[in-house]
Length: 295
Image (tube, rainbow, N blue to C red):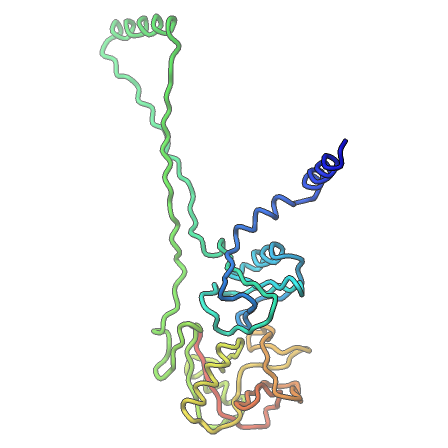
């Protein structure tokens, strides 16, 4: 056996024995690379960050989390999944080694084949003699020529339309600024209040204290403060330190932080300093605040 033949045998044995090789390889066609995101990755809308060995394994993890897109850095073996389909480069940072993909299966149309039932039409006979004659003729014909039966089926495709309601600015209370792309609307309240009173004020509007859970919302609030020349420094935002972790009012763990230098100094409540980021503070202060309504 030549060396080439030996290598071929080993190669095919590897393909045969390596668990899931072909199945995993097929997934490569399910991810569409975005050239505008080459050497970039998002810093918002992240739903997981994990270590993975390859783009394929990163994509599989994305499927488990039902994410819309993901970035993978082969040099660092790092995988990030996002809850949005990426159509632009908003909220991204430049870092060599990243490639980003949209998960094609996450937004494909669901179709299913429907096979129409076959209908059998029986002949109508007018007399016993006529039926007997037909039967005799058919038997004679069958003895000389094999019967041929043709069955025709019709397959149609039914598209299942989505019934999920789409976000709308009509859900916003009067006086609120609507940001449909961020799926929320918000309003600034310039009277300083305690954290408890600020929460009650938002609730009276059918809203809640603003949640800053990604860079896009962070930048939106900063832009509003700057555009409207608001001189206040501190703002209440949603977040409390409970049971050893920071969480929102509904108990969801907080994953997005932009801490000011040397913070959090206190593990109690979350506040926002327009000049340097998040602060850990207590309910002993009166601050202005934003309320929000999710769309």
